Picture 1 (cartoon, rainbow, N blue to C red):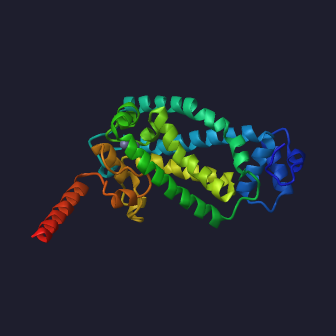
Picture 2: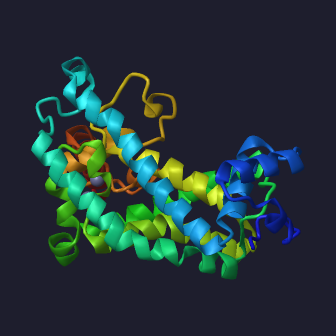
Picture 3: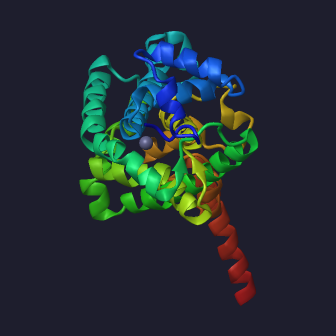
Length: 308
Ligand SMILES: [Zn+2]
Ligand SMILES: [Zn+2]
């Protein structure tokens, strides 16, 4: 039995011995639902076990989105034409480096992320995260995802800054900095403690949100996870195109922002946006350093004048 319909016996009536037949039953009996909602309802109905349905869906969603998003970057790395947009054009990751990274990421996915994924649905039930169709309105989902982006960015900024201090860097974050010129696959190349901490920004922030509001849909959460994975992989891509998002949204961090962090090891700690590093004066790179020094010089001059 599944909680995907408000009438809990409906899922038993619609369930069939194959996914496609179940989907057909859902389409015929629930024509008012949109295509995405019909697939979602058919998945939960067919699985007939919400714990397994949510766990498996999240695991597959993560694996598929992550590697599917990394693939175009891997292909672009093999084509010299694209070097003109590579931020550190002399540092092309070798096949050996990418293979090492791939193996480590897959292992970490299975070891670190498999357990939280399997315990996810019971937690959702306790918190009141709904799986029921229909989904919330597009407006509500957009606002919630926008908020998660802002909250995750804030968490990421402070956690990442902390990871650059002494022992945290030495024993945890150093692994992620193995590649001074990052590439897509290296987005989740990190120590398990870092994966857990930064994963908290992605999943923990929506949890805090639902604790406060008492209302969140699992579909919104899935969509947010997909977008956050795109952001993480893209910011490690190593390419800054004239059509990259940061060219249209000046506060969007993008690859240019995070590449500088890997290059200089210091500054640019946020994930999605530029405002934390801008406001707290932690922007990375020679240009930001020159501007900072210029500002400090001006301040010192002004202070000297005042003292006179
Ligand atoms: Zn770092
Ligand atoms: Zn990174």
